[in-house]
Length: 105
Image 1 (cartoon, rainbow, N blue to C red):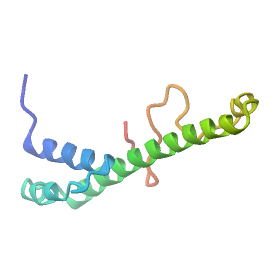
Image 2: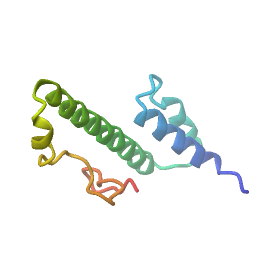
Image 3: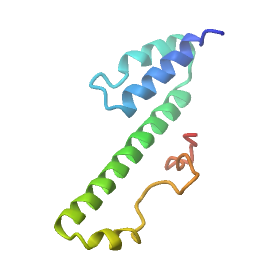
């Protein structure tokens, strides 16, 4: 098994910190990435993808919460909710592209 290059580890760490809403936000990784020669445009792409994944997760959780909330106030709403499209990727799609068109898959 080969070790990952430190720049890859730093990019993954940055993305994970952003996507998880970590209080440190991965800012300590930025200086490391600069010393490894990773360009600002590459760092920006990783940040955009991480934020997109974070936002998709939040939207999905909110939609699930809203659906459950509706069923608690109107038990018959369970049938109605099945026909409502929730803002999540289609079946078989791992994710949607970011606003600038970056793929997160």
